Length: 403
Image 1 (tube, rainbow, N blue to C red):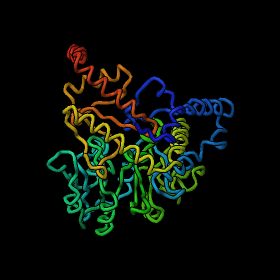
Image 2: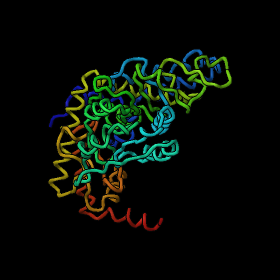
Image 3: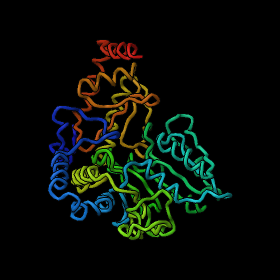
Image 4: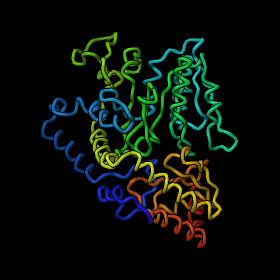
C-alpha cells in the first residue's frame, strides 16, 4: 500500500473524512474545517461593520480570490474574476463574441456538461451561432481528436470544450486544440472544471485565451465560486453585453448607458457578487494550495495510481468501465457499471462511501489527494457485499414506490 504520505497528511483538515470514504470530489470537494471559521468571519464583519464591509474587504474579493485561482491553472495574477457559476461565465463570453457570417460556427463536443450546451445552443444560437457537435468515437468514451480538429476551420468563431469530460473523464489534448484554434483564428473557451486541482493546467503555456472553471470540485471551495480567465492581451477586444455595475470603469459614478468597461479582470464581472461564496472559495483554495505546494505532479501521480486501483478492481469483477484506461487520457474520475448500478450507488452512500450515479456513466468514483488506498478497498468490499446480499433491492423498491 502506498498512500503518498505527505499528501495524505492533509486529511485532518477535512472533517467529513473522519467517518466517510469520500469518493465524489469530481462533484463537490470535501469542505475544509477552516471554511466554518471563514463563514463566521463573514457574518461577524457584516454584523459589526454593516455597509462599510464593502470598503473593508468585500469590494475587491472577486479579483483577489481570482488571483488565488491563477496558480492552479497556469495564469497570471489579475486575469481571473470570480462569478456565480460556469453557466454565467459562458454566457458572459457569448455576449462578447460576434457571430456574424461567415465566421459563425461553434464547435463543441457532444459530451459537454448539459448546462454549457444549453447556454450555447440557446443564447449563442439566438445571437446567430451555428452549433456543430462532434460525437465521441466508437467506444462512446473518447473524443476523436482528429475529427474535432478537422471541424475547427476558418468559419469557426468559438470552440467551448472541456479539458476533461464530466461523464467519461476523458482528457482532451487542450494544447492541440488551442494550437488549431490559433491557426484558423477561432477562440478557444477551455472548461477546466474537471481538471483544475487534480491535473496540470497551463493556460498561458497552451495559449488558451479564455477559460472557465470553479472551486466547487477538486479545489474544495464550495458552491457559487466559478471563475473566468481572459488573457490580458485579448481582454481589451472583448466588450460583454451581459455585464453589470461592478464591471464599469467608474462604478460609483452610477452613469447611465453606454457602458464603459473596466480595463482589468473585473471587466467581466456582473452585479453585486455573492460574497459568502467567496469566503468559502478562499478557504478551499488555501487548503488545496497546501497540497499544490507539494507539486501538481505529485497530486496527478497519486490520482493516476488510485484511479488505476479502481480501474483494476472493477475490471477484476467484470464490471464495465466507461473511462479511458490510458493514463494520458484519463482525468481524476473512473466511471464503472456494476449490476444494478443506481441502487448500488444509493446503498454505498447510505454506508458512508460517497459517490454518485449518472445514467450514461454508471457509478463515478474519484479519489483526491486526501483519499487513502484503504478507502478504495472499502468501496469495493461494500459493493461486493451489496451485490451478494441483495440489499440493493430495497433501493429499487423504494424508487418504484415513489414513481
